[in-house]
Length: 216
Image (cartoon, rainbow, N blue to C red; front, side, top):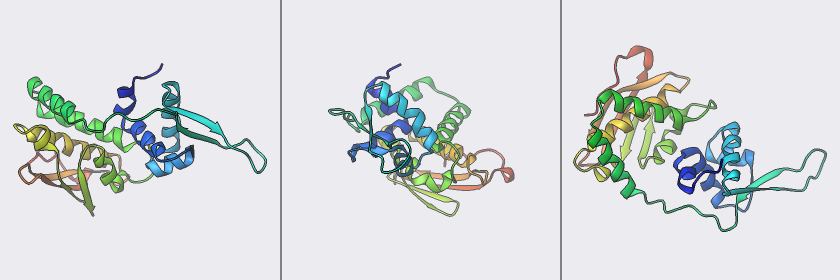
């Protein structure tokens, strides 16, 4: 089933693939996976959806030796990403969260689920990829050991009246990413300063902790 343009780019994995292809004429699948920081099987699954929806096409290169020619992928001629400025939509979604008034537990579970999804399939420690993963959510992140420092946080920009809701989602997403780490980590504490648009989140072994630290 073909997906709409916004359905294609709403998925962070497909968006990473499209961005990788945007700057290249044609790229083999293994190279797409490597540059996008994704598992080859993850790329292969989503590539079928991108082809079916008309965003991507494949071409067969020449072979210099035995075996099948290498398959390369490229964006279909004339296809382009929509505007990357989703500020208005983000504000609308934040307003919906406020209107629905979800519990703290619901917000945290949603964030953890999204974090586990962002981390993708096995293939390394996702904690080391946190800056790249959080960049997809609009955060400028720096990781030093088990401490994560966020700058230019979008929380007060997206939801000026309730930035703590966005902070809670971001902290829970980091917790979900950390959960998939071979080190079995989780968020132990978090401090948030919406006025400075800065946060500090600390990780610790999951077995040594109780509940998720609440946003400060």
